[in-house]
Length: 382
Image (tube, rainbow, N blue to C red; front, side, top):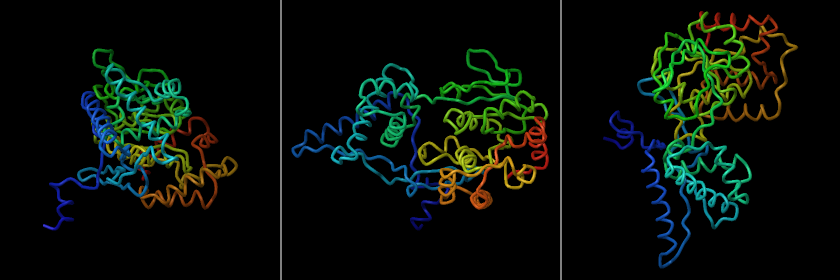
């Protein structure tokens, strides 16, 4: 059998794929200890050297799109190309030190049996080493460096997702040892999604819904919750109030796995950012490419789309800003978007304007629910 054919066989894993494993604390600590021992071994050798840290590259040219064999789900993956963090390079030295400091912090968290958010991690590191950590972004990037070095998930490192997400609608959640939550009987703000993925993984889910609708904005989510839209169309509404966090994506994936016949729809602004958010739910991202396949879902684009612009008055359309055009060009150059999504994006850039979901209120506050219901009944989504 030819080598290329062997790699693509049903009985052999795709050798290009690289992923982060879910590991128990003891194994993560062991990997950190091995990294330390290797470093010390090179440092105390007859020809002492400070070894570089080999990380899986999180760049576009080391990524691809993996298509599901037995499902319609596709996800971003990273291949095995490596980049390094080196103490010997002037522009890399601080990043090298940051990796070791975050690993040390994670080791202490795991020994104590605790979880910490990236925000908590930032303030602790800011107090301990302000010369190395001046922004949350530096901490977030370093955490992904550690994931890429140790090949284990962020949650395995003892780092808990900071969740902004909420869910409401036709679903009952059973929390182990806790109360049963009927998500159709709670307030308009919805059920707050915890950042603890272990807790989310233990939830027992019950639902008679036929659809899951991802809502980009909290205000739109609350409008639909207040109108009890989930009783008009049997559905579950979920939002992360903007760009999706890991916990919200994790719960969405759990719901989709528990109820595989539910159609997942997305309601986003008609702008490059809205499409970027949809793509993250659908495929994952290169930044978290080692874990993307764990959260990817077969999301279909409900709206807003170009066909909807005919019902939106011209005076409420807004000009695209320079950073939005930059986002659009980045998306257009990626491998992720299917042809019809690319066409929508091209039209946004060509027309130079965007439309927000709230523009539908020109027809009255009750029009939003009618708009969504009509599109669902007509299966008007891509």
